[in-house]
Length: 271
Image (cartoon, rainbow, N blue to C red; front, side):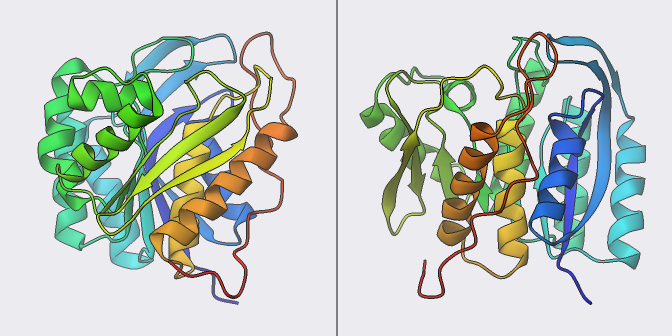
């Protein structure tokens, strides 16, 4: 049996709800073969991040080279890249190996408020990583940081998605989970079409790792050969189901349940 090969470049979450751990669980749920490049180690639980150890950039490069040169990659996603040196190294090796499709989750701040990307690294993300990106998946706060503007309403999200595409990604999904309202609305834009994806908002605090899970599901879908919009729609369904059956662990933001069924696309679904 040959499974699509999906690579995650991200930080390790010792609590298991986000980062590398969430990515690999998602890849398994999507029946793909998951591989990892660890960019940082965190001492982390549902309450917050108690410590971060940054993996040296040259070792990040060594991990990428080791996996790609032997096993190969059908799709990849990036999560926490921590600092400018790691961003630049990841971008250089991704370009060298022509890793595509590439899903970029521009992880900057944890749900607890802890900063996960150095301020000095934001420019490196914009200038070096976004031009290599197939699908960019920022939440409202991350989109605001990337564009240096405020996003308050759906119209702002629509405009932000178009502006972010101008920075290089082929497609952008601005996630609206942080906005108020009974519906969780995301905006997808690929230059040819703009579409809103809506689901019922679940009233729960157990949403740790939703961004990692969403981006990983897109990567897994695209590794199966789905187009970007089909993969995004599937990922939206998967994350919604994962939140609906979230695990009440810890005393803070508990993790979602990665063992739910993926949102497999219908046979007539097209991008």
